[in-house]
Amino acid sequence: MKFDQLLAASRELLLEVGFESFTCEEVAVRAGVPIGTLYQFFANKYVIVCELDRVDAIGVREELAVLASQLPTLDWLMLLDRLLDHVAELWRLDPSRRAVWHAVQSTPATRATAAVTERELAADVARVLAPLTPNTPRDRRRIVAEVVVHVAYSMLNFSVRDGQE
Image (cartoon, rainbow, N blue to C red; front, side, top):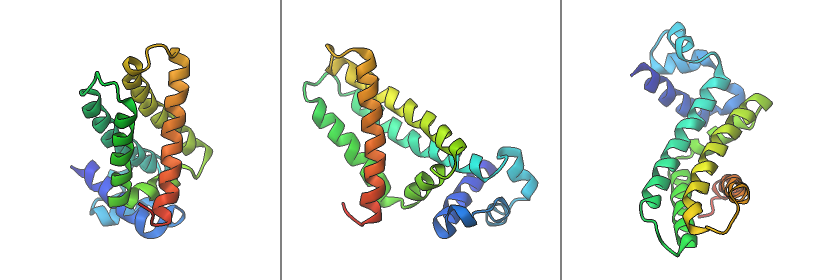
């Protein structure tokens, strides 16, 4: 419960003030918990934004699992299109996703952690693509999935920023 309160307060604060002005102290105040409670869960603000990024990826991975349950299908482009539409809708409806994405791009350590989360999502995408692209070598399919995920998130950042849909 407190963990979820801290994440909700973190998301709101990040969206309101940006990562540079984001502080653990303010998160604790907004969540209504002592600062020591926050530090039981998170060592610093960088850990918080990495957790928010991980949580954001869960929703995408869940939708991917739903789409994967519709296999086999010969129309894998339609499947990928539906996944991208789902992710775009998440970003459009929740502006904090863009704020989280920017925050995890802020330092080498947070970028590295975000890259792990991104690779995990890409691994799921590659698994879904496997039966749809049986003649594609596994390493190539993994690379394609990583590129698709990375480019999709980068494009979402720009489209949400510019108010495009």
